[in-house]
Length: 179
Image (cartoon, rainbow, N blue to C red; front, side, top):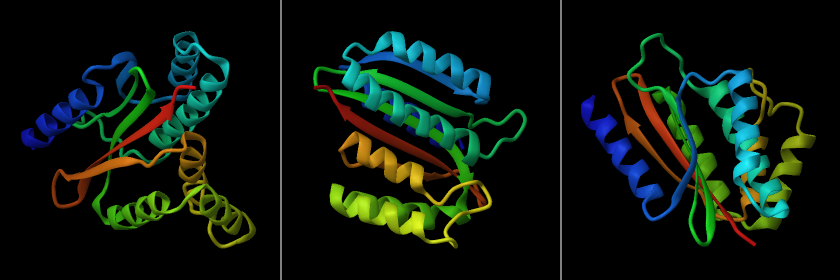
């Protein structure tokens, strides 16, 4: 298990190397904490048009952490969020523990998202909206992650690391270009 923590720490470090970490948090995400993080992000992002994109992607990232993270008291693998910046992009990175039996479905969705252009993403988004059988018990149909892809305009980087027989750690990196 220590290897997963080390791997994740290394990947997170690499993600932000050469960039400027603007905001980070690791632990349990609550609605009050999300409000504070969003307010802090607003003061860390300059240009208004970029801020709107980053802010909207950040809302979806944080919402996913609250809805889909496995939460176990005293967990060695708390959820995390990072907002960073380099000369070209803002980076939003999340990490959270998920049930391993959900990895394949999520990975398939991410592969599909990365394979589609903006028009294809919009078509898929609208198909889900018009389908009344797509919504899950956790309150969504994957619209948020498609919306993140549309707003960021970039491919996602992600990984799944097996923690034990039933759990994995999911990391997601979203880039938003500075204009």
